[in-house]
Each structure stands twice: as structure tokens, then as C-alpha cells.
Image 1: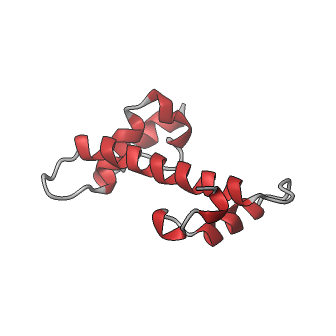
Image 2 (image 1 turned 135 degrees about the vertical axis):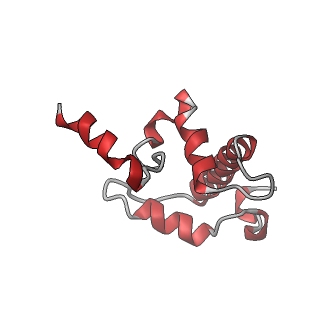
Length: 104
């Protein structure tokens, strides 16, 4: 089956949304259908991998929480680039300790 025949319902993300996100970058010109389908599938596999890692680190046996995803990101050198986007939570009671770190 060629990518032109690839059914949208086999992908977790909308082809149209992926194409719009890709087009939002000013340096991107035309985008082939194959590129959009590939990006959609890559995104799906990335999210699946991230959530599997978070599932393994979960603190609640029934639910994956933000802290679990953050722990998966913070604990993986491969995901260093996501540290700024998915940081560990800082609780208000811990804030004075963090202020001291940033005074230096």
C-alpha cells in the first residue's frame, strides 16, 4: 500500500493537523503527503515510547500522572532536550530552597 492510500484512521494523529504544524515553520516550503504520514507515525511512536517510560515510573498503580512523565523525561539522557518543556514540579513549600540556588 502506498502512502497515498494510507488510511487516516490507522494513525493516532490527524494528517491535517500534522501538516498544519509542519507548515507553521517559515523555512518549510511544500510538504509531500509521504512526509506528513511519516511525521504522524513518528509522533505516534514517540508518544507511545514516552508514555511507556512514564508508565514504568508511575507512582499510582492505576494512573499515569504529570510527575511520572516528568520523571521519565528527567531520567533519560535521550530526552535532555525536553527538560525545559517537561520539568519536574516544584512545590511551593520547596520554593525557598530553589531561590537560594538561583541567587548565586
